Length: 166
Image (tube, rainbow, N blue to C red; front, side, top):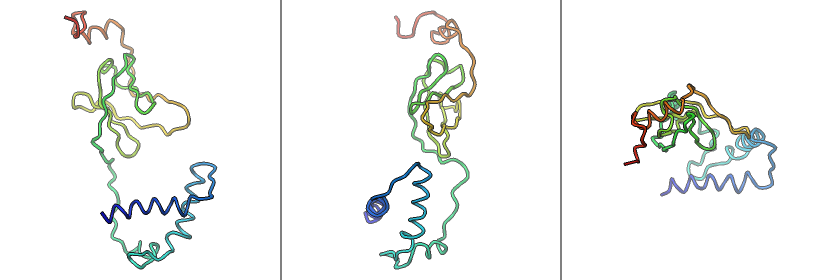
């Protein structure tokens, strides 16, 4: 329980000591002000548990680099693929291979800004999430136009009747 409190206390420390009275013109400005505050204020105070300044303790930590490969979350979200091969995820349209049109895929977020699209346990596409710039974007992988006839044939198995019909 103590570790949980320390994490929450770090957030409280930022809210109580860094944020009040500050204004930011954009994200870059916020990050620059935060780094200056960390370097000149937060990391120079004596820590209550270690009785050392964090800036002095950091070089003695035995930290290992993060792995180069993306961290897989294993959280997947079901999404319907439109007949024109797009999947909507977090307000952005992503193009997936044509054979998935009208079907269902599972979307998995991976660190490094990647999205993986899974179909029947196989990775069907891996795309990079766009950085938000105020506009909805469409990310294109492979596009092949599917005629209404091809779509109907694929969905019905060639019978012309929907699988939900008797």
